[in-house]
Structure formats: structure tokens, C-alpha cells
Length: 191
Image (cartoon, rainbow, N blue to C red; front, side, top):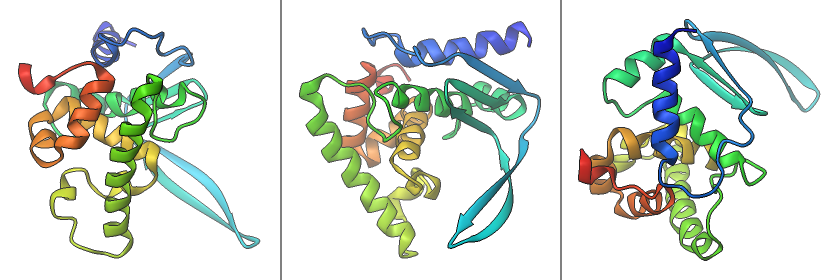
């Protein structure tokens, strides 16, 4: 692990929570950095039929551990794109802080209603388009992967909030406002 790796990851971790007053990253114990994407194998059971799958991971977050593929993370850190594996995986950690990854991070009690209304509305619209092979239109900014579940939606939109805030605000002002309220930041104002 180099100083560059430490500094880049620390920068994004701090940037995301700089204005959040609550304790954060309490559950984060370990960050594993691999030089390249990882090939993982998993076994799935469906109606008693076992299938083995291989898939490529750019990053993963689970049980207090983040895994990051450095080659992709470095490219994304130095060149603003819609994707940033470091932000994505750290967003999962923030999502897990209230007990489960469900797209609802720890919020003030008074903010849950507005958050849930906006996030679930947008998630359901995207999920419906992907499920029925409809044209994504403006949702192509967010992408199909975000329709996997609410936790992935939160992580993907967090990436957009920090990496491409102007587009997020232009196409989804309601999402931008909720994320701005949660992160206590307005990245459009300083981009």
C-alpha cells in the first residue's frame, strides 16, 4: 500500500462526510486494495439447482471490509467520470450504518419521509424501465446497475453526486436535493 493509495482513499472518505456531524465509518474495519479487478466465484441455489458463477469485481463492501481494485480506482480518482469505486464502496459503508444496506443511510428522524419518498420513487421508476426493457431516457445517466436494489441505487447516485453533480441536478433535481441534504454539501456550487 502506497502513500498515494492512502491519500486518495482518505480524501474521498473525508470529502463524503466532511459536514456530517454524526459518527461515521464506525463499522469500517479494513480496506483491501488489489492491483487489478478480482475474479470471484459464487454458487447460487435456485429450486435445488446449484450453479457456479464467475464475475469480475471492481470493488465490494461487506461486513466492515471494503475491497478496491486500485487500477480502476486510480483512473476514476484523477479523471472525473460518472463512476468512482471508492465513493461507491464508502457509500455502502454509510448505508450499512443503520443496520442494513437498504438505500437509507442514517438520517435525522424528520428527514426520513422526504428521503424515502424521493429515493424509492426514482428507484422504482428505474427498476420498472430496466425490468421491462424500456428506454432509460434520462435514467441512462444513473444506469441499469443502480436498479439492482436500493443499496446499489444509493451508492451509484452517491457517485454521481460527487463526480457529476451538474448532470444529476439538471436531470434529477429531487435526488440532488436529497443527497445534498444528507451529505450537507452542494458540489454544483464549487464545481
